Length: 300
Image (cartoon, helix red, strand yellow):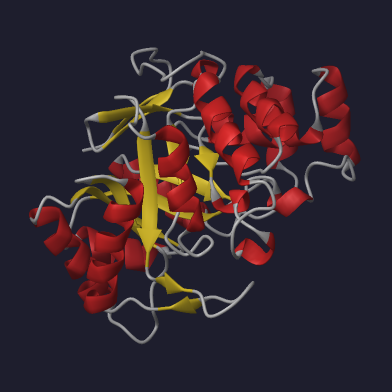
């Protein structure tokens, strides 16, 4: 079973230690990662489509994340599509021993800003094979179902991931965009070590899923942890006031809240900006008081 160890310093980082104050979480019982990760969706072009304007800058951003102690990077074959995975391999392969690169399959991209689900076993198995090639891996440490395809029973999609695991192509299995019922159904088929759902100070629709993850020792990866930028500009005066108390930004307070909200939480803020990367990782050192947590918890 995956066990949270938020106070541990036993997860070595590929580089520096800026991410270390966030603590660690051990995925699947054997992959300890710092609880401040990096989401690699935004290193692609506009509309999450095509190459970025400056691929060299994107690769440098990935290397800087490792220098800051980030050792968990989340991506997907649909980011680009295929671009994010390729850039990760170009920038970071051969990977440091303690780096976990997680990817996802099950979403097809017909065009910019367009997404189509495909959870058929045939598609998932082919997608995994292609991700292995792009990432230059023999085994993907964490392979996640991008979302449940309403036209495919979840048991079939998860069963395909189980087959990949049994073949040694996938080490651990995760889910994304699932509800509590779907999580439980998947858990009857495989060990689920992570769930990636939308979650932030302003979007808590997955509270029941987070509770289930805590009960079963599953990592919870909140995507859009800054609500796609809505929590970073200081529009909410309560968040802005707490930020001023810590000489921090509202976005850093939003990330610190996630880290203290649950020991199972691994935020994966994404950015194409080196300045924002440094800012996000620095949130790992913030400690909110009980009163501040209570005030933020009451926000909706």
